[in-house]
Image (cartoon, rainbow, N blue to C red; front, side):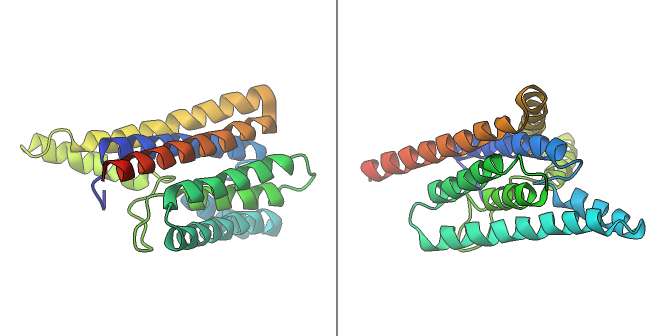
Length: 217
């Protein structure tokens, strides 16, 4: 990781990865095969749809990508302009998810897609520092690469456990996606309220941790 995290910070990062997987699982099913946190997949789909001349489907994929970037921008601005960076970003994430839940019954998919993608983009800035994201929360391709590299390093006598942190992050987002799909199968769009509530809960944990550290100093 670009920056060493404490155990508490890593636990929060894993929780955020699970949240991202959960929301992505619901979004994928609700939006008919578009991701709200995995932009590489949307890029591929948009390209394929363009070749197939399905401009509507390609346009939705590109819209999701732009919304994700807009969410990163919004989260970065919040991180740069506020003292309580993480909690405020997560409050914004909760608002995005809640708004998507409120608009989920519309006949068109784009409002929900925009809001969820923006929220997942913002999640990646929770651990931002000096306007640069320390590492990505919602995409795990890099983590899988690190797992492979870490296994080789361990076999050669290097750090034997460093790769496990990336495995935990991958498992978190995978299990979150399973949970999101299961919840969507049971209660549909209502499951998004669980994602919004989780974002608020994690924001509260971050805020409490900040107060505790401040009291100690």
